[in-house]
Length: 339
Image (cartoon, rainbow, N blue to C red; front, side):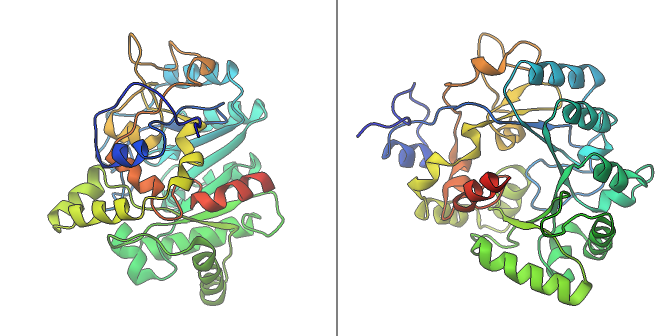
């Protein structure tokens, strides 16, 4: 039986492509509902699992006002309803608040991928209030609900600061069940393994954080670490890269092919170039035409129906329950429908 994975120009054979070939041959874009915007690599942290390789030293790759304007023009010519702002620490880019204001003015759902510790950076003292007043949905990294484990990924003291910032967001109304201000947390494994079941770990997080710290949140997004850039280098240093790739390949789940976020999302990099996802953005695997496709020279409707550029890292999104920017793929559709 044929499906919408059938046909497309053959891609270089790799472990993911071999798996994909068993179930039809390719992935194609559908109607776009999300524009993810990566404002650059500048960040106040340098987490060891960060596929974007963000750090305080990354000052060159940051979005300009001209590119931010082009982002809005691209949105105006699309049917996109969700703008997902990421980085680096996207809030440290001078265009962040402009993009939030303009996207909200257009009636769009705006998501800020926040590392929490940025809320205490100089010049960011009113950031939490800004996010609340604009009803920005926050997706915040908190690799575990205890400091010893979380700080191993994010640095000494990061967990304590994150807890205090969640407490501050809670006081503004974030994370309340049934409330308008949504606060979601993100879990990434510390070791080279697949994450635990999302619902199980969410219950554990909620119980532990409320009991030990009196803080609360809406949803936990469980994400598989992507075997690219900084994390891939870490695996190679530990001689775990091949074992990790074998693990992802063994747990390939074809049911995830219908749910992967790259089918309905397009990512704009700091310079406006377009990618199928933020992982491809980190790898420089852009959408290709006569010239590289960017918000300056492309309309959203021309992207729909294109084949997705894949690679071995795509095994990270399709292993087990699946993984994406909104957590385990098997749980994503139910959550998005509730919104």
